[in-house]
Image: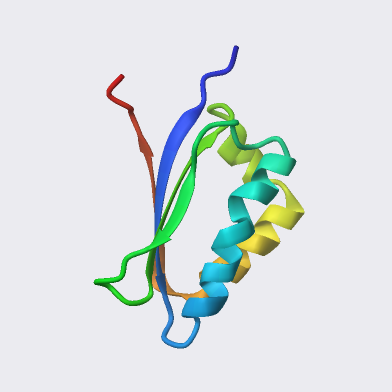
Length: 101
């Protein structure tokens, strides 16, 4: 059985794009799940109130190769390009995490 990969992503919105980015993040994981790329595990997207325009998202890729499959999917690429446009340059940072089970 494939092992899910825990991921944490931070986003820094461009000034004036905060609400639109929040809207995309509200549906991002659900769409990735519909495409079979996200494991059926807890996830969240949240704003950092002490840092205006900063958002954090955490989710589980379905398996180690799921992120690469997402990069090859045209709909996902389009969604991610929109996210990049809504963020400052270098404003999307992603990291894989190792849970302390």
